[in-house]
Length: 390
Ligand SMILES: [Zn+2]
Image 1: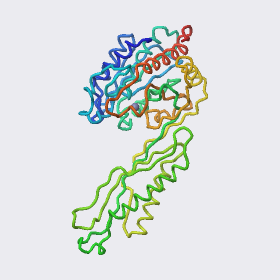
Image 2: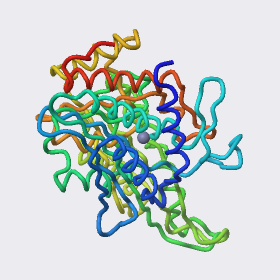
Image 3: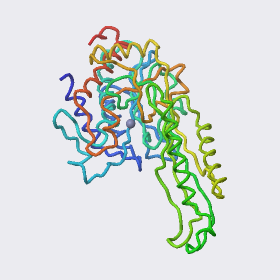
Image 4: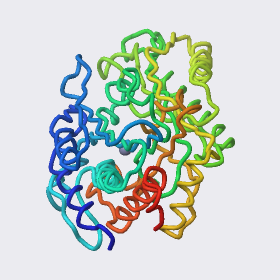
């Protein structure tokens, strides 16, 4: 298999640097990326926001000017799902049946390892322009102190094409879902449980809201996005009441609403407020949205020459349909939305998002190497001239 040792070894080294988020400390893994890239002549710099000095991102680059190709992957992982159920230590890479197991194997240290090795090979043959590899902190906690912070400080301004490494089975994804997460509160009136009709039960009112959310979810299902499927709504956290013998006067719930293009977060929040007003009228409670966390969706037009070329390279290396496909979870690609008119951006990488955030997370060695080869051949064809063939 082409280059298997390089990428698998690099992945093993990244897995051995814990970077679970929370707490989101990426210092050690960022230093490893900086050191390995510097060994191949890359300039490397670590960056962290002053308010979160442990959330270290790394930018490494080789060459000058344009064209500039950017490879981006995130450094942090979720904490290991049920660590006692893993067959072996999540922080020690293990090879079995053509798979690498370990926390972050596919999300997102696999893409990062493939990008590092591909960029090193591109740099060896590069005749023009610049290759940049970014390892970003804080993606699993929405990316505000990682990619968003880097963008605000001008990190991506001189880029001509960006690849965001996530799990697409080595197809191009040009869109992903967004999230609106709302905490809602219902206030009623307490009473002794021997005479519940004297009170106004906030938990009972919340039960009605939950039924309304289920109906709302069914309506959303009728209007799917062609690549991402439909938006969704579900209630995933709930708390309320004071004691078993007191009518509950308050109840709070967290609603997770996944949005797809062209949903507007402000409209989505208004739709949920409408449901709350309905419950207020019918139940005599007061209801409000306490907070709304918004993470935007991503949708790129595609069709530009760089994206076209990337698709051709996928086809020639893997022989499979290059896409475009949808990537259902969120990613740091959302932060490139305001830059899309200048920087065509795609999501691309080995494995499936269903392997991510799971016990015994794994990535296929074959897909890992295919990913590296696609990146290498694409980058070399853009920056190196001569060696653009598979
Ligand atoms: Zn990821």
